[in-house]
Length: 439
Image 1: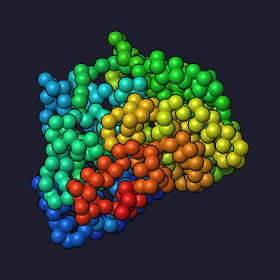
Image 2: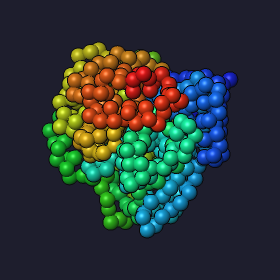
Image 3: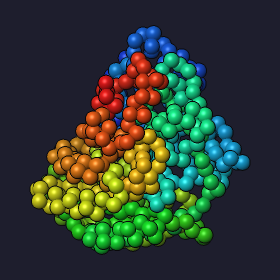
Image 4: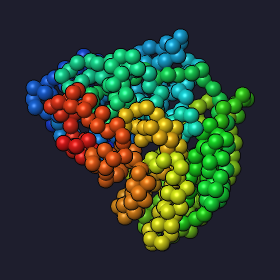
């Protein structure tokens, strides 16, 4: 995949293939000054502006019929401050490049999501996260931000400078300005030992609180139509490094997780009745394994099978009930779900529109193979998530609007007031923001 999801004749498409847009023009600025000039020029022409990363959002959060800003020239590390233990990177830097560059410097982020194709600004602005008892989201590791606001001003913010902007802009949805650089907290590179093992669904739920408490990073995948899950615990390790051997790594991560999984998805799409059988075989194919490596090699894995996804954050205490309801719904619905359901956790944070804002959270993600009808499944799942005051991931499929968000985010009004101040003319508006933030 190229650095940006794109299409022919000026049509932009996202990674999942479910969103497209035709911008009036595209700009690829080579500097912050050029980006600011592009925003000012858009204002003169009466056009809205959107920056787009790699298109890994399944919502139309980056879609625009105005000016599309491509950040691929705004990449690389600006500064490493070993006293403050921070790194400042240009907004268009892919997470993969950041992770590899940090590793060469003997540094690492504390936590990250499970893919690293996205740009740092796209991942942060939509609330991308991993799983963790003490840490989860990428945005919560941000120490400073630089953004171009609607009038072309370059604004910097941190806990000390423009703190009210900092509180909101770490997960800013592209609504407050265009992020041009991010300063992350980093730490000396460390080792993680990953332990992956199958576990019955009922056992995981019965022991969930204990599994969460005893591991720095706990997550699991449940295979619908079965009572099986695959669990993963990541904990810091004194070493030695014991990476996954190349051959078994290829077999499990490429052949099983991408190759065979892709074929199973094709079979399931052609013959939905076969899905429960495939699910039983898939859930048994993954055997237990333990390996030790540097963080990004443990947290992230390649995802080549294209899918569409919905993910909600529910209060952590509501997780077991939410999942039991989801399983009961799938069992009685006649739906055929070929993708595992992914479950992760995050501690409460202080970011205005973070899905974990002010509450310890558990994430439940449902997926469907690209090209299969997902509406019935996602609608039924969403009904369960919203009954638990769920907050949808900003970059994944959902049907919620500003009225709903005002009810589940105590600080929602704080964000919209700040947006009125920073972008009174709605230079960064699009249909998605109109729906989720109000007109």
